[in-house]
Length: 342
Image 1 (cartoon, rainbow, N blue to C red):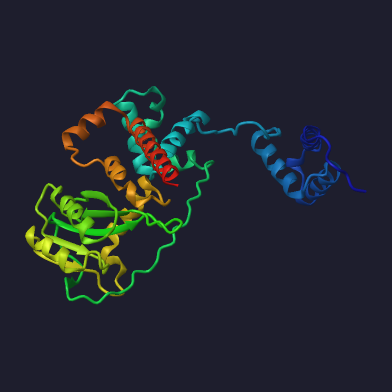
Image 2 (cartoon, rainbow, N blue to C red):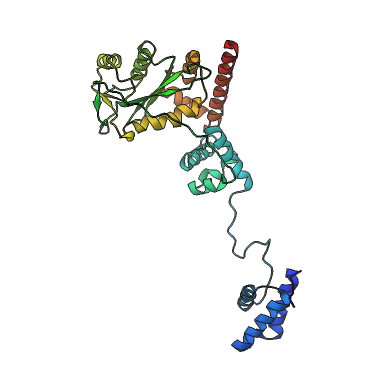
């Protein structure tokens, strides 16, 4: 005959009373085994559960159901479920930040901008930031890239630049905003200094010398230091005599290009293409005629003094929301331009 457990509280009470009535702790080992088998048969609990209950009774003198009750030595709960809402809001505005970056934004919101919502989160650890955001599932789309076709041109030196801690060694690459219904998208020029991480971005209609050279020269001139070296992959938009002549005019000492089977030679700017260009402009098609509007959004001529004033005037979250709104206005303007052209 088998017994089924209907009431856990009754079973636990029966086990406790039986142990006390039979004076289980004073029995011989053989008799203890019989008592354990008897309790398991009557209550329907497993032998392992009965063993744990007997050990608990010997240790504490009682047996109780711990389900839906706090443990005896519970850790104090510092963060509430509502505290996860602010990191979620920051993630939505910034696009899934790393733990240290999120920690700095939360600390700055409380210590610099006096946001009361961030008081408990101002000292949150990197690890606990990931605990707070576990309920959120971000899925990023895949990006398909065509392999760069090799080109033979006796311009530039095939080697990796070696700045040795000096600024002025820039990397350059081009990001194409796709084609749609036979219409070419615009091209984004991305120039990054290897040491200081200064970065300047500009968009052009075509990657020919007529459109690209003036924009590329302006991007190089915007750096606050002299450009000593210029590194590109083997794309023909950069490895040509027109770009080489422009670099000579600017007194750029070195013109290097990536080596075959060394994809890391230009990895810095390639990573910036995804982390900066794709983040702010997306991967969707942008018509070439919209290059002026994109350049207005990227805004050149911003000084450090202006950035300092902006940083103190608004928190990181508020600034991210303002940038997101500017991106939405740009997207609407691009969509209106496509509709009117159609």
